[in-house]
Amino acid sequence: MASLFDSFWRSVVYCMHPRVIALSLLPLLLMAALALGLSHFYWDAAVEGVHLWLESLGVLSSFWGWLAGLGLTDVKGYVAPLLVVAGITPLIAIASLLLVALLMTPALVSLVAQRRFTSLERKKGGSFIASVAWSLGSTVVACAALVASVPLWLIPPLVLILPPLIWGWLTYRVMAFDALADHASRSERAEIFRRHRMSLLGIGILSGYLGAAPAIVWASGILFAAAFFVMIPLAIWIYTLVFAFSSLWFTHYCLTALERLRSEVTADKPPPSTGMVIEAPSDSALTGAAPPLLSGQGDK
Image (cartoon, rainbow, N blue to C red; front, side, top):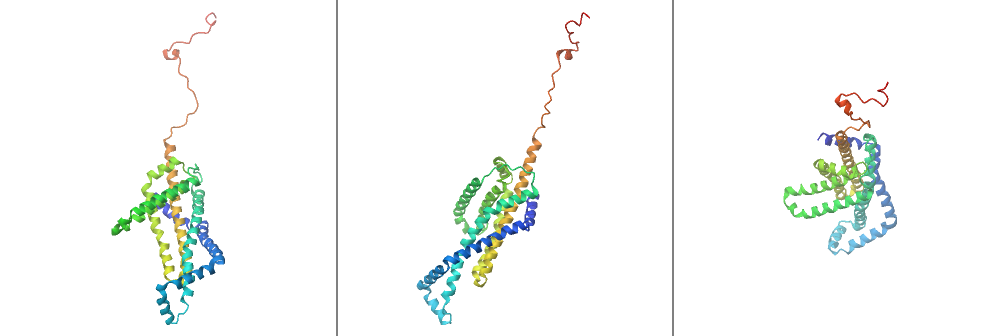
């Protein structure tokens, strides 16, 4: 438990490191670049398409007429760009965050290792391909469990327990693997997962609850159109900080556990041999008899 809290507070402090802050700002820069590129080539066509779609909806014709009676003649001209932005922003954000996640975790592990675990040997127990395969496999299992548990969500307490539990399991599987991929061997990683499964699951669940905070900001940006262009980038930045904090928490905890595991193995090893060979005593030494004289000595 002490290691759990120690790694938590260390992660909070590390979130203020300039490198971590720079990595957290990377999604905003990527999102801005993607948005500018897409708007240059596709903005006019997208807005025109959405405008025509709104006009074709017969269900809303009375609504548009009612707004026109109030003096709002070109409401569709204002709604269409907003719908385009609302539709494209999640796609740009997801693409940016996936790219940053791919780059952020190795950078954060390297930062923690350089500052705290400089003497920890890197055994390269997990390659990039193995990490991708592990993440995909864990995601498939988590999604299957999530779908299978949907009927249980009708029971009020379970809807607050099962989804965080499933996503917490997925978070710990993916982030703990990435935290140990460079330093631990396969056997060491399996042993850490066995010993610290409940603690790692707890970190994953708490990280999942923290990840719900940006969703509130995101929903506020969609609900209040005037704050859309401020709230959505803010939500992405908060989400990236939460991701960085979770990754740092897993890294501090897992590398500490790995260091202790190796110290236990070293303590259990027998002391090394000095290489000196001790000859067995001769029969004469055991019986107390004098050694035989060499040939010719008895005649002198």
